[in-house]
Structures are given as structure tokens and as C-alpha cells.
Length: 258
Image (cartoon, rainbow, N blue to C red):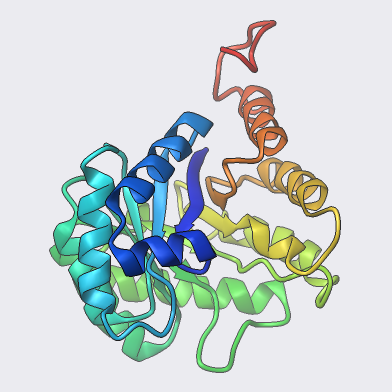
């Protein structure tokens, strides 16, 4: 499973301040620590409401790449900021993200094609997140077919069934699992599936426990990638155990350390 760190995000106060001050040392130490914790890709987000979004993203990507040689997920709703981040990337890039809104697909799928990028597809449109798994699957199919019209093949997509906070939408947890099962029938080979894991525990107590438990459920349903807090060692142990149980890694008694 592809493990994407969520922590280089301007919504975290310390990261936001570092971006404001262009504090390269803080960002680079923080990025390096994500790798030490087990990140296989980094999600970069400069935070909302920035007048300097494109310049900030360009700086953030270049700063991180000086010390980290991993795929980068460029996380922003702004096309100019997204484009600036992609152009600064040296390695594989993931566009995070498009929705099923026509204007967004028409802007972002050509960008993915031009830069040979993977792209996360959120199963929502201008009306919001569907209430049921079947509607999520319909939107996933729409995005897959639209992507192919722009010569972006299904193997470059990550379908996101959109995890909702259990505190506000408890019934959605199992609907996400069902949506994933439906996603896997949409193509052969099955499309890749990604989630933003921490959303499930947003606003709740015992966040790590909820995240870990849900991650185990998602791994059993065929999860391909997750944007997670790699600084949670117990969560990372669940990933290691899950990869072992899915026969993605060779068993050894000391598998956590290995």
C-alpha cells in the first residue's frame, strides 16, 4: 500500500508559519522526519486563502525536493497553484484532486496528461458527497471514462470514496466500504483506491484508535493508498501488519522492525 504523509500542510499552524516565513530548515527537517516515520509519498498543501498560492507552492515543492526523493502529491483546489507545484516537481507527481464537476475534469485531466501525473478522483460533484455507495460508484465511472477521453488511463487514477467524520455521519463508514467494493468492479485490473484516513475521526475522541480500526477495515476491502499521519507509530504498525496479511510483504517473526 502507498503510504502518503498528510503532515506537510499549511493547516497545521507550525507548517503554515514556516511557509509564511519561507523557513526552509523547518520544512526540510519536517519532511525528512516523515520519511523516517515510513512515508512513501508526501502530500503538500500550502493552506487555504493564500494570495501567494502559486509562489508558496513552488517554494514548498523545491524546498522539500532538496532533501526528499519521493513522489509528491500536490494538494490544492487552485489551478494556478496546482500548475506551479507540478512544474516544480522532478519526480512522479500526484494531482490532489479533481471531482466529478465538469469544469474541474476539463481543467485537471489535460494537466495530468501533459505532465504524466497520477490523479486522485474524489467521488463528489457540485451537489456534494453522495449519500450512498452506488452514487459514488457512478461518479467514479464518469471520471474514469472522462479521464480516458483525455488519454489518462485508469491505471493513473486513484478513486477516493470520501471518508466522512464518524461524529457527524456515522452511517457513512460502511457506505465507504461498500463503495470500494463497487469501485473494484469498474475495471480489470481493479482501479486503485485512496482515502484521507484522518477524516473519519475528525472532531472525535480516541482519534488514533478510530483511525487504526478503520484502516484495518479498509485494508481488508482492497485499499491501495492512504493519506495518513505517519507520525502515529501504532497506525504504521497496522499498515505493516496489513501488508503482511495481504501477502504484499514476506513474513518474518520480526516483521515490524524488518
